[in-house]
Structure formats: C-alpha cells, structure tokens
Amino acid sequence: MTSELCYLSIAEAGRLLKSKQLSPVELTNAFLGRIEKVDSRLHSFVLVTPEEAMRQAKAAEAEISFGRYRGAMHGIPIGLKDLIETAGIRTTAHSKVLIDHIPVEDATVVSRLKEAGCVFLGKLGCLEFAHGSPSADQAWPAVRNPWNPEHGFTGGSSTGSGTAVAAGLVMGALGTDTGGSIRNPASFCGIAGLMPTYGRVSRRGVIPYSFSLDHCGPMAWTAEDCAIMLQTVAGYDSDDPSSTNLSVPDYTASLNAGIHGMRIGVIRHFYEPHLPPEDEMRRAFEAALQELTKLGAVLEDVKLRDLEEYDDCKVIISEAEFFAVHEKDLIERLEDYGANLRFRALPGGLIRAVDYIQAQRQRHKLVADMQKKLAGYDAMVTLCTYGPAPTMSAEEPTHFFQRPNLTAVFNVTGNPAISICTGFDRMGLPLAMQIVGKPFDEATILRIAYAYEQATPWRRRRPSLV
Amino acid sequence: MEDQNLQPSEEEIVLMLKRARVTLPPEHLERCCAVVARLEAAARRLRKDLHRNDEPASVFLIRR
Image (cartoon, rainbow over all chains, first blue to last red):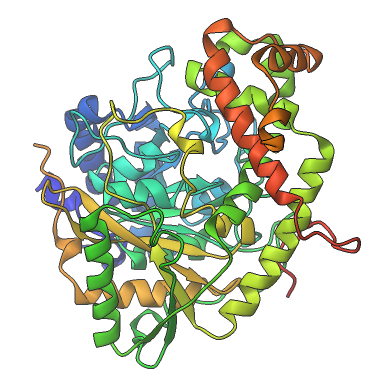
C-alpha cells in the first residue's frame, strides 16, 4: 500500500485529499517510511525533516476535516532542492561552504507553497552550488539514479529532486535551472521538469548561480503535476528584480484541450549531423514526433542559430556571474569547495569585463531572433540530452565544457521549456525530449506535454527499488 | 594559428589567478587550463557581428 500511495500523482492525491478519502498524515507517513527504506541507496535527501512534515500534515488534516481545503497542493508531500532557503532549516547548496547556514527567511517560492498547505519532507541534494559535479571530498555522497542506483548518474544540478520524484520519495519537488539543471535530471530520471519563463517564478531566497540565467521551477512525475505546482509558485514578486508583473493564467484549465492544429517547429540541426545523439534517444524522439502528428499537430523543421552561439554566450555569462557571487569565498576558503568545482569556478575570475558585455550584447540578439522564429509556431521541440543517463564513472567533470548543451539555449533566451519522458532504452533507462514555448506561455507547452503523456504508456512505469 | 598563439600559457594562467587573488592548487592546473581555453574560444567567437549600437541584454530579458 505504501508504494501505491507514493506513486500517486499530485492530481490524483489531491482529489483523494479533497474528498477526505485520504488523510495527509497517512500520506506523509507513507513517504517518510519509504524515504527511510529506500533513500540509503539513492542519497537524494541531504536533510529529512520528519517532525516538521508531521506537524504540517496534521495541520492540513485538521483544516481539510473542517472544510477549509486550500487547493490542489494542500497536504501534498514535496521536497526542495537544497539551494532554496528555508527559515530555520539548514540550506547548504550541497557545499561545505554553507554547512552551517540556517536562513532566517523562506524563499518566496517556499512561502507560496506553505500558503498552499504543502507538507515539506526535507531538503534534496544537488550539485554543489548548482555548478559542481560529484567528488569524494563533499559532505554528502553523490545522488544516485533510481533507474540504476549502483552506477547511474542523475545529471545535474537538481539531482536529488529528479531522483526523489522518480523513486516515489516526494510527490513533487522544486529545482533550479541555469543551463538545464531542471530538465537534465528530469530527462535522466524519466520525470517531467519545467523551466518557466525568466521572470515568471521568483528567485528571491534561491542561492544564485548566475543571476541573469537562473530559473526556479517544478519537477514532478507528470506534466499535469508540474502545472499544479507552477500555479502555486508563479507570479510577481517585488523582491526579485527580474520578476515580471504579469497575471498568471490557470495552467490546468486548458491541459485537456488537445493539440489538434497546433504548429510545432522541430529543431534537429542543433545535433545533426555533427553532434549525433545516441541512436535510441534519436529514435524515441522521432517516434514522439509521430505521436504528436497523430494527435493532430502540424510539424515542420525549423532552423535557429547554431547551438554553439548560445553555448558560448551562456558559459561566458554564467562563469563570470558565478565567480562574482563566490569571489570572497573562493579567495578565502577555496578548500571548502569540492575538488570538481574549484577548477571550474576559478577561470571565471579571468573573464574580462568587455567579454562579459559582448556576451550580453550577443544575447540580446539571440533573444530577439528566438522570439521572431517562435512567432510562426505554437511551440518547438528538440532533444533534451544526447543520450540516457551515463554511469557515474563515465561522468568526466570537464565534459560540461566539451559539448554544447542542448538545454542552455533556452536559459540564454529565457523561454519556458519542459522535459518529458519519451520511453526507455534497452537497459531500462529513461529517454526524453524538451518542448519549448513562447515567453510566458507555459500553458501551451504543458498542454502539449500532457497530450503526449496521455497518448503514451511511459507514465505507467516506475523504477523497481524494493 | 594566430588564435592559438593568444591562448595564455599555464604560467600566465597561474599569474592571472594570483592577480585575481586566487591561489590555484597545482593538481587543478591542467583542468583549469582546459576551462580557460574553452572560455577564451567562446569569448573570441562572441566578438563577431556586433555593431556599434547593439545593446546588452537587461535583467528584463524579454520585453512584452
């Protein structure tokens, strides 16, 4: 029964909670039990907060039983990437640098989830400051991929969020995304991960990696669950200078409307012919395109700028901004950073001011070009990663710089993008694609993702862990 | 060829980091140099096709 409860979607659990067929306390107990049973193999949590979770679950139960149901996230157990600040609860960014950091305030997204009545199970591991990669000198072991716990890499940087959702240890999680850190682990873990438009979700209280590229967004088993979570956290925040003051639509209202007649641009030239993806990933993508066509969408190839142009722009901006954020600590306590972050972070201090500005000038043009191209379509689709999750041992820490990233394109331009599962390879590892939308049109990409998930069997398979 | 000659040497990278007040542990030198080379190449490519009036992106990345 425990795993049945833990494998409910947020939408399903919400209906049961609302109708009082399921109690938040029972649900939270099921998750806490499963975390205890399973997470010693996966290491997705850096901190479990059972007392806090039970207190919130009991409060939710009391409110719902008195008829004060707050909405679709009320009583839902979730986790937070440990880059997101929580008042009175340690927030480390998975780094020894912040090992004793206990914030005094919640991030805005945490406040909004609390107002919605969520139950917080704890803090989820990530790559150090969302930028490092696993190394033996870190305070916590590397998060493992639930589809291959012995060897599988979870991607990055929202590693714990991806693993915990796929393994049924949380119903949903918040991640952050500066170059693919929501979509990449979503792809490797076979879940849905949504990077909202830049400015749509507040980053106040989210420890920065790169101010002008950072996004915060939901990770969950289904696109529908991402829509429900986005509804809770989206909206203007006067305390975040990048926040955009636009009304938030009802993201679930149009999920069921289908995609008949939608025009979808297909981006293949990012990887073909010079950066060929693994064959099973490419074939799953082509099959997904056929499925979208069957659902009534009209697909055509679209050509954007070369992938390298976005990637160059992204690395100069993100490395310079990362160094700016960390300059004091890199100078005074370099040894507290993991070995694989040190050599990555230091060169950011050598980027000239003029090169940073040229990158931002190029970016302005890339943003304008992207919006012009997207004007002719409802959305675009492309691969999310070149292949399924690699093994931990194959994860060379410099690979980050060796092949242009397929996800960072949309951090540079600020467009919303969602990664969804497109099947499994012969080893049982998840495959994925990303769907990209117009600025502030998360509703359309959620609708496409939902239609695809409903038409395919991939949401019915979970990793076998116990 | 000219571009390659502009790549800083290992000694220059160590010196530049010292100027940035950072001490590079010797075991990180090789990988650090690989990252510097990647950043240098990116910065070089980004200079092309910029015109006098091209403005940088702002914190409000997307205008409505």
